[in-house]
Image (tube, rainbow, N blue to C red; front, top):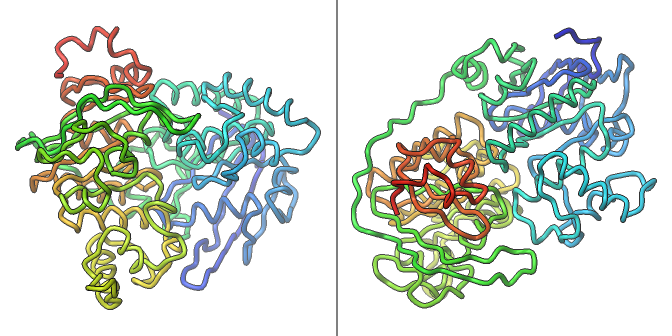
Length: 510
């Protein structure tokens, strides 16, 4: 494929923060119609570089050329005027406004709110992205919020579209449909900067790939000519450690859910309908599904955030915990990692030491007095054990990259020696090195006899980790199937709620 001279060119882009040089003399060139991947581990400088292109961060040095002309991108509004749109990994939406109002705020006011609402429905339908423009953002799951961001960017008809982890909320079939759309945009001359940790996606979709490590460019390659191992070496300096799967040695039933039906308290939520599952000691049960199909409601019922479950519908080691508090469940050995890192998994403005107190109360003495030295020591041990890149136990949670904060939060719960660990989206937006580390820790925990329930929209992850799989769709849960009997195509169909009609369901374990 022949490309015209660069639409975007970066020369010597440098950005220094007090503790780190995020970008160090970065050069990057994107031609019209080119789909260009930017690959790097968490903390490599990808997000800072994208924010500089989008005008959200000012570089300390370097030059940006747009269609061959030097430009100063002073703000996101200025970027959009040039024809640059971006979908952030961490969303920029107002919780109290509707999806349509959020999109309208990011556009010029040539269209009325009603016209924007109609356009959202049109674009969302064309791209296979389910978005209800009238829903308040605070009622949306993480995946649904990402769809709003993608639609908002596409409504601007950009010349350069920046996508940060855009496929984490989609079924395999929807990913293919999105790729068709992106290739069509590319053929029409739209340039795309594509950030993903899914190496297979990059190799399949992208024409070029620039790799960052420690803020510097370590290479630019044609990803279709590279192996996953080769891209990993460029990104982290080594291949990620291989996970050693084994047949699960199942023990006694730890968690049992029977007849769990819950009406939603949110007009835009998803009711749970006759949910049934069980998890045994020494096994991992994976739950797949497109975001917004009842995952949040199920996690709330299992973690204790929603104590409305019918008596006897949720038991832990035979104890009825349907209405038990999260603290009581932790006392019995249940620990939980929510999908939202900032805001639920950790308080952004508090230190890592203070954030240990959200679920770890070892440092709380009689009368509620805190042993601050003990909280700092616990945080320091987690940083060391789980190789978290942070400025020490006093570093604020929001100062960490997404992958490092995820390692800290998952590590905090693993270190508590749970008997049952429920994890939602364990490696969402995490680079291959950190993802391999987190998955390895989860497998070690399983091998030590812990029961694990993993909810993820990453099918590769679920197939890599799980002993059995179930699918949630429209608030219902499919039968379970051993991973060795499942296929990606089959699970993709089930994610549309088709397990009853699917021939593959024959012989599936109940």
